[in-house]
Length: 325
Image 1: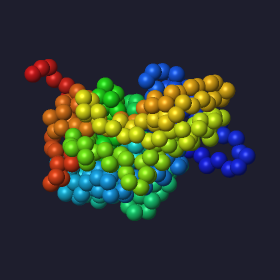
Image 2: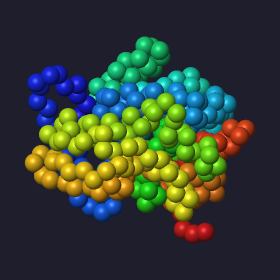
Image 3: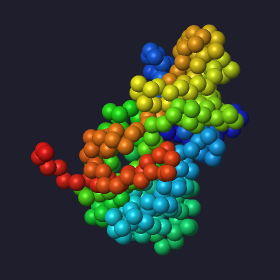
């Protein structure tokens, strides 16, 4: 995706994939736009603010689990692995892992080049003796990692429960892609949010300060900025609901009144009460998580959780395939 700050009067070339996803998503029923388009610069800033909210438990809970688990991860994985982080973002949790496992090299992967290079510089300064190789790419597909780490045992890192943003079919495909990228014998340290009381879940995605609402609404603002659109922002509101049948939080943009708008000259109408589905956040019980990992080609080795059982961290291994059983 393209992350750009647009000055007054400056024209921006929209990402063709963004344009295609928005137009196709608003034409289908029910309407939906992929959550990856939240993350322009403003969206990324808002998400960082979300992680500090009192209602948003996943970030601080996972950080506490990492503090406890990483020394054991180091014992199991051994020193000298190449740590490969998928969707590294600001890499705020990464130093906990790097300090424990003594890697030979760190490879952060992110689709946003500017954000990737900035966070890589910060980590390189924090770990001056560690080789940092930022890799700008879409990690949703199998990747040809840098040849310098081709023969180095690898430890994948995928914190933050990002796997929950994907429907299970896509999550399995991603896990398979990670296995193909990292190779047999690799390990994967991955965070997954647990199923829990909706009274805890829903406020985490609909906070009292309205930061998550601003994050969701920013998608409409981005459409207006980058796609020559005139979506009436005030006609929509943020909505977060728990879908028990699918075990997921859903975020929507709900029309509060009938609205008509254009995107690059193409007309759209939306009726009051109709929604644009913008994000899923699937939650997994311990057994569900293990089945998901095995479906993606990863054998679970260890699981850690917090005392309240809010969140889990899993270490899994890409073992050689064998005939059943």
